[in-house]
Image 1 (cartoon, one colour):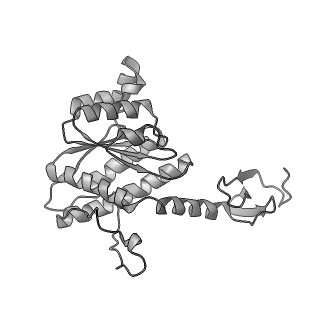
Image 2 (cartoon, helix red, strand yellow):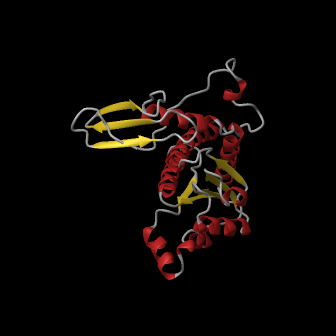
Image 3 (cartoon, rainbow, N blue to C red):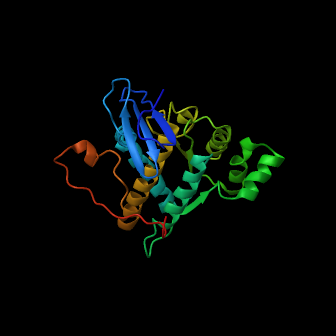
Length: 261
């Protein structure tokens, strides 16, 4: 494939949309982005197409699933139970990010604080168990020290088949913990291994991880409102999105877990 655009363009990227969206080639040089039509398809900027796909995937997640997640976390706060979050790679980053948000951005003066731990943050502990036992045990062994019945687990895995995540979930259920899984793609084994699953409906791993971060921020904002008012989120009622254009406008607040976060 040859590119007949401006000379000096050093990088060429092709994005093929698997679900039938236009195929576009974007040439990048400094801050310039060009879109070139190929295969007689309608030209669309790669950035616009990616954002559109992400929005479509987000809109397919049932609001009830998110309300159920918020309710489980609210009950954990109310009972003083701990929340443990973990995952691998990009999901490990999301676990740390979510632990930060739930711990700090849900604080309401005069109210108890949430007790949240990311099992991805103690590098010495992780490498010790990986080296001395097996990488599959890095989360499960940490839970053996800390987990109590009624605690909440949030396991994040884009594909849903990470052995260390599944082993930790198995142990948590045996100990009477409440298990939540965040996944994508087909859901993998995690989908059926947890009490409650939220699945990002896309086969793009990067997009799954992006959606998980959006859900983290959404849930954190709503959870803080629930803590502030002392009212549980409604799971059975229809969401603003599902009520349609006649619904009242939702409340919007700013989420800032830290400067520059």
